[in-house]
Length: 343
Image (cartoon, rainbow, N blue to C red):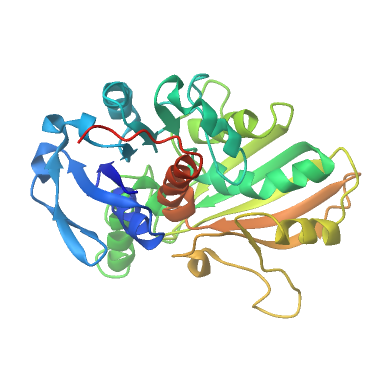
């Protein structure tokens, strides 16, 4: 049995990755539609070994598809996702628009798969923030084992998290910095080439950014609202792959060897952790193109009673966005929750 699937925002970096992953994991697609704004009508995107032209989403009949993957802005999703869901298909949305809506499940399949049973409340499922996804995949099995009390996270987020414009800006600035001088920043608030920027998103009243706020709110919704979590989000001059330095304090004892064993058995996690050479840890470059969340540098924190430090890395375009959305679609398929629309 195949499904008719539409990808909205198919010309963007995440939309293209969604198309690649649908084919890569052999999701049962009967018919695929690439949708974009009117200016992109006819632009061709890859799906497997063929190219498909983009269609105008404003003229598209969504009653003829079963699943819609959305890779658009939050404001666009706020307007369009309810309209699309009202026509019958399940909408899996990658924006921040619906994540904290109590009637919309926020899902990472390795963490809270049972939340998919609420998919039909609004016909929308939210994909979490990229940095939250990799964090909770690592935290959930440890929380189940020893109950997490507090987490301190510092992120090192790649420019692809800001879309193709962010990638282009890093490339152009890096290329020009030794010739004519770095090009002025447009996408980022300051120069990103050969620099780090301790600011992602917009400031909130408490001095944190909305990117940082997303991480604890989403973790609370998916894992446990009693976990105390504080975050500093930093943009770094890396094309693809987010990294996180994670300090965890537990209610119950859990040493580094136990944590290593637990994480090795956890779904979606690959542990690369030894102290004998440069192969004992993962960098974002090595995680690029991979599906897994990689955990390295697992070590006891002697400054608290039950503490650990971790280094967590993942491809933010894959597990942090497109892959997680496709895995949600796979979860819906496995549980028989995708209703076939009339042809």
